[in-house]
Length: 54
Image: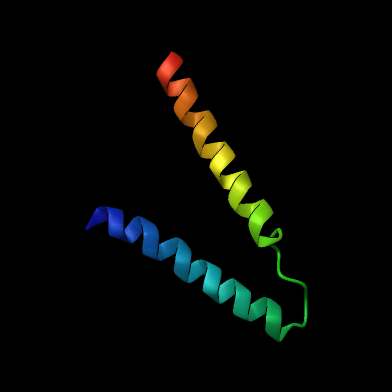
């Protein structure tokens, strides 16, 4: 259940921020989709590599 909350809380925060930015007619504070996904994967892989070697 704790893992589920770790997923739901940031998702809700992101949805709320997305709504607020659209209502204020501001650009979304997010990179393009593909660049964002690759960036997140890079951070994840880098963290796992450090855990493996240290």
